[in-house]
Each structure stands twice: as structure tokens, then as C-alpha cells.
Length: 386
Image 1 (cartoon, rainbow, N blue to C red):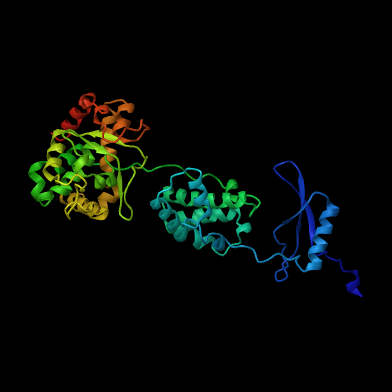
Image 2 (image 1 turned 135 degrees about the vertical axis):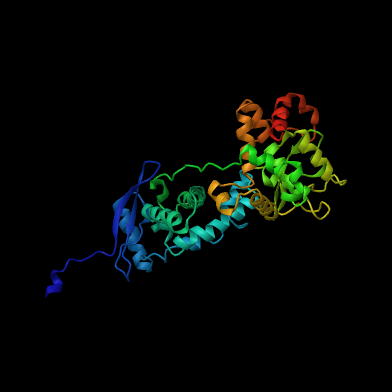
């Protein structure tokens, strides 16, 4: 008798949802048979409630009212950042340049930092609160830097934006997540006294173990502002009397690639740096200059950085101090930029360092690069090591 007074629960409910075109379409929700929770809304494609009811009743007749198991984020991510990724195919079709190294890094961060948190979560059930918990987890428990967290966030944003665009989710929850800090840590640099000690020629044997390749690689970066990958990529044909041509970077997996900003540049170098480059320069124009196998491949990235750290220890900068001061090979570039920015205008500096957009130069059309215009730079560079 009591049962007859119990409220009957209809197996589905309807509600309108306003589309981007201004029209309203009816969606239906049902209930999970195991948990009793309401399922994610599904479109009926109908614009009137009557037509929507008729649509749902047909689904009931066919036994199709209950939706299939929801797609998990892990299932959705299966081909992301691989050669089978539809997003990457479309980006390339639109003329976007995506390097293999970039794709590898995105896939690595997806596997290492995104999937462990979201893999088993239903794609349509990821919320802004979930994302904010994930960000806190990455920063406080995993210990990622702000820059690394931003990179991971960007990966998730791209993926969920695509899911929204393809109507796999109604709205990207990341749009409601508070902005992540954009504060960047200041890269540490050595003092001019420390640099002069490093590059004093009388210390080559004691500090650098007589290794001219490593001595010159570091001297070039500190006196020309080259990134480590750009140093590795230099070939004999790129070296000239008082400047170097920087048109590539080097990737340990893919070899030569374009520079970070995909632009070429010419970098003036002081007489001291030039003399050491000429001493180690090989005969094969295509051979890498910083190489221990006859120019076939450049010295490994890790070998260069490890050697530099050992050199720092010899001038009294141990691992603890180095990390506290945030000193790395890239500090050479930061030092160079900091010194020159105080004494030359940003336009000229940008042409040397590649920090700003410059007109693309025709490869090895050297008359377009007039070294006489950079005598002030050469003077500053030479003064640094006196």
C-alpha cells in the first residue's frame, strides 16, 4: 500500500540548452543503473519539448536510452601527440610548423604529468575544481616549476579545447580555472671577475684540463650569446674571421633543426674568441666544429654542461652554490644580453641574440651583414675578457 503513494521517477528528464546560434535544443538526462546518479546530458536534436519526448521514447523502444560507457580522458588521449593525432594533422594542414622535438615533449608531459591524474576520469566530467587540484598537486607534491606547470596546463587546454570544438564535451572547464602565475625566475649569472678567471688563458690547463673544445664553446656563448643547441650546431662553414653564422640548433634525437625563433642571424665575435675558433676549426665545411669524432656529430649536450659544472667547482662554485644561484650554461647568454643591453640599443642587440624578430636573411649572403656596423659590439666584447 505504501508503494502506491511513492513518487514515480520518470527514467529521464528534459531540459533546453541554448546553442551558439541562439537557438535552444532539448537535451535529456537519465540515471546510472548502478549508482543512481544522473548521467551527462545528451542532445535530442529537437527544438520543442514534444518532439524531444518523442525522440526519447523511441530510444526507450530500441533499448538505447542508457548511454554507452562514457569516454575516459585516457581513451581520448590515446593518439594525442603522436603521428596519428588528428589535431597535429590539421595544424600541419593549416601550415603550422611543429617540430618532432616539440611533439615528443608534449607526449612526454602528457604521460608523466597529465595522464596520472586524469586518465580514468570521464572526459565530460572533468571540472574546474579537478584541474585546480591537479595544479596544486604538480606544484606542491611533484615540485614542478611555474613554467613546467604552465606547459602541462597548455597541453590539457589544447586537448579540451579540441574536445569542446568537436562537441565531445559541452564546455572546456579550463576556461573557469584561475590564471596560473606567470612569474619567471631570474636566471643567475657569473660576475665579470668570475668570467675573467674562467677565460684567462693561463688557466686553460688547470681549470679546463687543456680542453680547447669546451673552453671555446663556453667562451663563444659568453661572448656571443649563443644558446647551447646553437653552439652544438655550428659547422666549419659557419665560422668567419670576426663573426659566426647562426642558422641552426642541434637536437640529440633529430639532429640539425631551425633556431628557437626559426630565424637566422650573424653574431660578431671578439678577436680572442675568433682565434680559438680558428684553432679548432676543421677542414670539412659540413663537419661540426665542436666534435670529438671528426665532425660527424657534435659533443653531447650533457657532456658540455657536466664539463662546465666541473670547471665551476674548480673556481670555487660547488653544486650547492651553483643551484642556489641558478647558474647553468644558459647563464652565458643571459650575461651577454645583460651587459650589452646597458650599452647598445635593443634593435641592434635583438639582431645579435635573436630575441626580437629580424628580416630573414638569404643564407650566406654575407654582404647584407656589415661587420663595420658592429664595431661598438666588438669593442665591448673584447673589453670583457681583458
